[in-house]
Image (cartoon, rainbow, N blue to C red; front, side, top):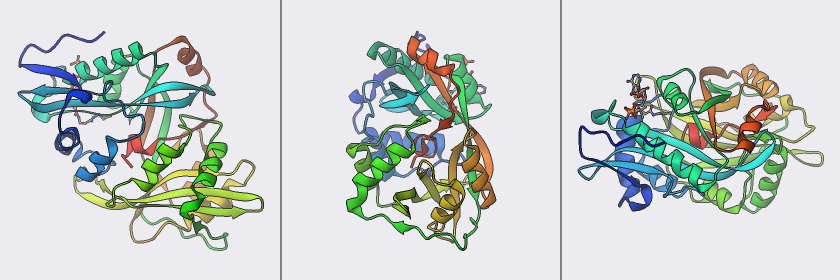
Length: 337
Ligand SMILES: CC(C)(COP(=O)(O)OP(=O)(O)OC[C@H]1O[C@@H](n2cnc3c(N)ncnc32)[C@H](O)[C@@H]1OP(=O)(O)O)[C@@H](O)C(=O)NCCC(=O)NCCS
């Protein structure tokens, strides 16, 4: 149940749909809330303008809190079909929970997120999912709202990933291959909980509409009967532990064809990662084979994130009892790309 409005100041809550100039306001607040948050994308206005157009981003479920017209707290909710417990269900993905440093500890984040949860429940969504740093203050806050830790995810860094030798070389995917790559990914990741099946709008947003400041390229490795593997590599400025920023290559949608050997496939794909800066990748704790290959190629888990789920109906509650064999880590919700 949504807690009462804090009494100390004249705060008003409003769905994002009723907030003017949303992307610029979100960017201003994110600079303050996430500008020194290690591991996430350094706040960029072009990124926010893109992010608010994410397919499924729901401006009625996403909430903002205003104080004298200024946005001081916010939550994003994106509605997507997601696999949980092996079944696809409508899930509200929460991210970018933030409040202004001058307005903290007054219940604003709790108010905004509780209102989003109430609206998700009223909408009939099966569950809500979010990512946060394991065993952190935000994790405890989400727990207090009913979110439970479902899957730990390793946030890998490789200062200089090993350049494999002797592996088959990947090639850059051509634009006209997008349909084939979507089918490949949907098939290769079919058993992964946490996965959002790709369709044309999601592909278009991730690949063709992304900001020029965050260029991404998809690489494929050919096998005997089709693709053996695929990865997307995005160059992005990431917040460093000292609050500065570091240029990184973020690996997303790393997938190996069912039946292919992960070791040579991933090693071959990583041949596409340009040198000269750090590489980053997310991989769930349950992905033992993938994690072993990444670690063999110089990746080390810097921090641990957790995927937390709030079940909103009986089906989702049941799904949480089935430990996932595979889990897809949603980079855009953890890192922002
Ligand atoms: C996390 C954040 C959104 C909390 O915002 P807030 O408006 O201060 O949060 P609230 O006042 O609603 O507090 C919610 C709960 O969080 C916990 N909490 C918040 N700030 C805390 C702090 N500094 N120390 C300990 N607990 C804290 C408390 O449990 C609190 O509940 P309670 O006051 O009923 O005990 C805010 O600190 C922030 O924007 N941080 C930077 C961005 C970030 O980390 N976002 C989360 C990413 S997953």
